[in-house]
Length: 177
Image (tube, rainbow, N blue to C red; front, side, top):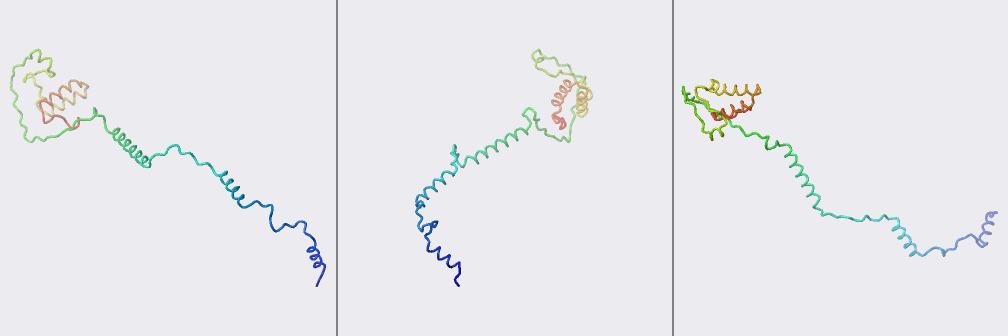
């Protein structure tokens, strides 16, 4: 059936197309020009690579880290130790099972010092008859030294302690002092 639609289609085919595109695109740029323009556009939007200022060797980082740790441990260990002046000498305890007390002479003549000896002597020489009873027993002597310290007479306590150490080598220093 031929109707008005078929006639219209035939009419359009016979007419010269006014708005029809030609088969070949003559206004398109060549492919090579497209490639150049696209490459330049990509380069324009690409960020610049940062300039390297310094490039250290690969081994410098671990070496610096090891040196820093070594220095830190040395400082920590040094800070944790008491100063040389605060260290106390080690004390050895000796056990004396058979202690024989030397008899004290009844009367010994006082010893006189020559002037040159008097200048160097730090402990006065006392005659045997003038030796106090607490000096004959080491425990009593230590108790007297402790009493002198507690009363505040530290100079006399230090002098007694020096004499005690000289006389009683086994009790040279007590562990609690």
